[in-house]
Image (cartoon, rainbow, N blue to C red):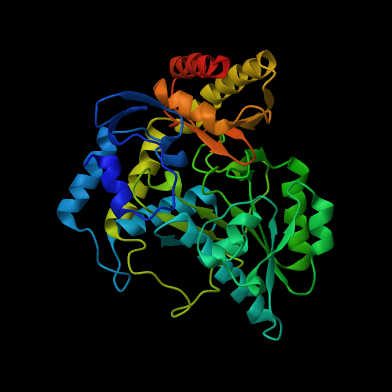
Length: 394
């Protein structure tokens, strides 16, 4: 029995996995158990920002494993304090709560928003406004604000679902605010929904609406944050600051960790007994977070993303003009999408790319998603474009 057969026998069939078994990685390349090499433009769904086998990152985790892996939140630990300090200082927000994933970060942000409104008036049943085609996770609370119907159907009680507005349509959001609204939640760049960046007037308008109605503005930067858009946090490109921000994916660069960070306005809303986690904020995970921030600064990751992200965007623009099968190119920094015409299936292109040693992802409605490690260089982009062209031509 080979690995794939064994996997199908023991793992729940909740994914249609591609027929490769990955074994190890180095830099921006992955290798399967047969030692076939793949150029990685997916980075574990925008997770491995620093690439694979980053020596300083690995050593920091090894050293921490020899000291302390877990203690619970009944006690303080040094890595959590250091990581929390770096997040607070870099975001300009007030306090952070560490989770095990992005989904859990969304859950915490929702609870905080509901509690914030409840403390002002406990007589109402509060609701959030979320965006159509937004994606925030797979648990019931996170699904309640996920704007793709197929993910919600049969999975959550209808009563907890959010009110959904059209992304980038400020008037639609405005018309859906009522006395029960406690928060507005949106991705700054919709990822799973098809790579749609927010418009400037949309984010600044949301900030004004939330200030006007004293409701919280939650930015989900789980995929688009941590340098991916050419700023440490994507909202910095717009000058619109959230009350709560969620982070994960590249926050730990492979170690499962997430966080939600809150402003002084609402950071004291959750008190002892309101929220908790056994593993969240443990020394190993927060050691990873702390080291990620150090390496982002040392390697000047944000400026690098600005440079190579511009190059990637230009190359994808050329490709879009060259091939009629490409309907539209969207993106910024190192998060880009190519939406294909209906007659060409994104999954077929992705499968063909795998055969040629290139990993790319899908998103939204028939869109190719490019979210490579942030350490990628121009020659890697050229290599990717060359392979992708072969796939499109075939």
